[in-house]
Length: 236
Image (cartoon, rainbow, N blue to C red; front, side):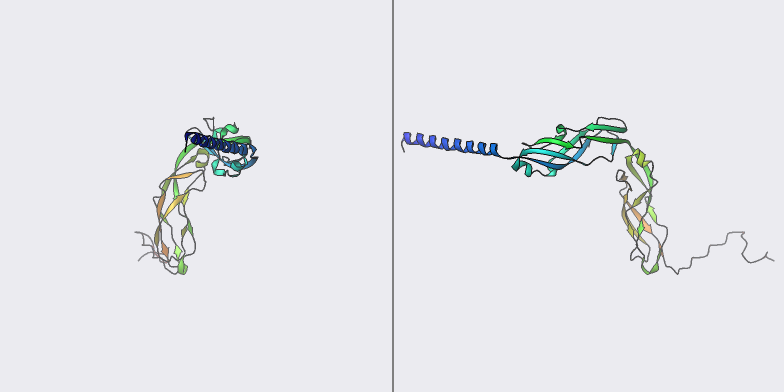
């Protein structure tokens, strides 16, 4: 192959490459622009020591971009980040815009619904509360459960001050009495009745459940010194 032939080959290769690039660019320019509404999750950045009450979890975001890209977007690819400016308990309103939305490349935000969020906050608080066992089900053979014993008997919780102040206790996860005729022990988790209040410690407790037979006769109480016997008179 001569040098002249080689040069012509390189020129042809460069021409084909330029033609391919032009074609790709032309196709991209002709690609249809599509809009799509996606339910995007909302995350909040708030001051330390504050807890959000009933925050909105998702907002609707209308997106616009190349058809192939917009159609492939999944909700988990979007994130709406809200910076809460307030540093004290109370209610504040935050306006939303495209700057709050983290989007994939080639995609722009058209609108957000709602356009503002009303955020309620409360101070974080701790409390030590008694743990109440939760018994469910029917014992075997008509057995009767006695008073359960919980070890340890208290748990520390953390949550919004207004909610923690109204709690009298926390409970255990359900303890089934089904099939039990004899006393037993079970290790169960400690749970809160409110989702905004979490159990700090201990996460688990041991519950002892005494069981007795329905026809069991309770033992007589020992007579107290100096007590008079019922049905009798004074001793001779």
